[in-house]
Amino acid sequence: MPAVFFVDKTWLPILVADVNRLVRKTFIASRQPDGLTQEQFRTLVHLSLREGIRQVELADILEIKPITLTRVLDQLGQAGLIERRPAPNDRRAHQLFLTDAAKPHLQTFETLKNQISQRMTAGLSDAEVAQLLLLLRHVHAQMGQ
Image (tube, rainbow, N blue to C red; front, side, top):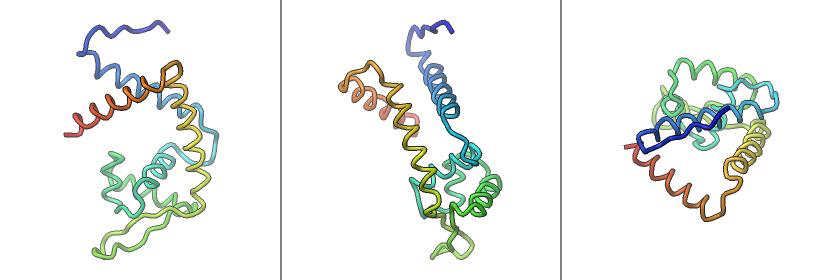
């Protein structure tokens, strides 16, 4: 595929979106079949960063409808990978927690994350990677406002 040349900062959103697409594509292609759907795997990863979160909050983070997340959580619960516990301050809500059975799936994520990070930064010095991270954190903060 020929290289696309982004000539000025107005092309930045397109470049970032394209990099995101390529990273997702690489991630999906690198995953070994583990019986989980992409939605289930993504839910586990995000839950691992926020154990104890309520379902509605996780749905917001994943940018999916709560009813869609309920179906995914039901499947993960039946597989023994997560558990729902009543929220102490709201009897209508449940908090979500991983079980020990989820650990191998998260180890797979760590391995893939490291491999893809290596590929993304191949040929860059440590200083360049540090600068890239600094700049991306800045962009992330600006877009999160």
